[in-house]
Amino acid sequence: MIGAWEWGGLARLRWPARALYALALGALGVGISVSAHAAIAKSIAYGAGALFWLALAPLWLWERPTFGTPAIPLLAGVLAIVPALAAAVDLRDAQPSLLAAILGLVWISDSFAYLAGVRFGRHKLAAAISPKKTWEGLYGALAAVAVYAVAWLAIAWESQPAAFKRAALGPMWFVLALLLLALAGVLGDLLESQMKREAGVKDSGALLPGHGGVLDRIDALLPVLPLAALLFLQ
Image 1 (cartoon, rainbow, N blue to C red):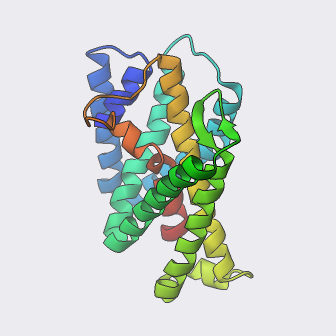
Image 2 (image 1 turned 90 degrees about the vertical axis):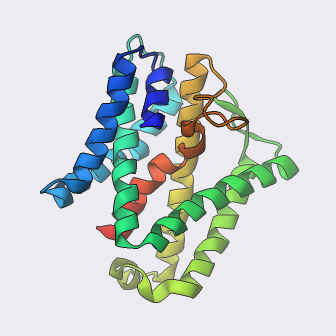
Image 3 (image 1 turned 90 degrees about the horizontal axis):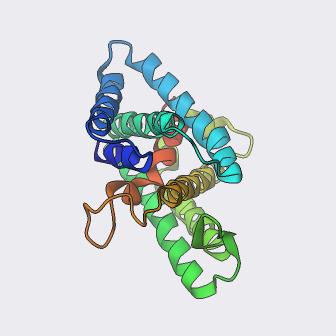
């Protein structure tokens, strides 16, 4: 809900509409998880989230439109935040260690993107959106996630979804799936950076001294969580 509050601010929503927006998104996310038809509601939410992140978000980043009203960014916030909230609950309920492993994937990706970018970064990934991100940082993140995926397989291959085991490439599909999640995390990071650039602010908020707002900490998780729920739980 704090992230939704910050998203509303980036979309230039004012009080009290901004508070109502945050409350509505929180209620919707929780409602999906406890609904009498939770399985159907979650499938719809995850499908909508996947459509947004895999199709609409890349188009947004490519075109970088300036919206005259907050309506489209606010709708995007629903598609970004609500599925992530429902997926976090769903993954935790399925197996707490699964949620922790997905969080670990994002943290490893972010950390090695930063380290590789600082050490080897030469070529800008998206200079008009986030000048500090480089292709070398992205390659470092993907390499680290590939190693993480192999370690995950070595420890817990038998507990993976049957779909991965039946796939023609076997364990390779699992590695590719985690690389896809890492790339989705980059999309989340870039989209929030684009929104901040349009809003003319450095951080989404000031709740976390030295780190900005909640969205600045969870931007990469927003696409990863619903996609992970689709991969591991459906």
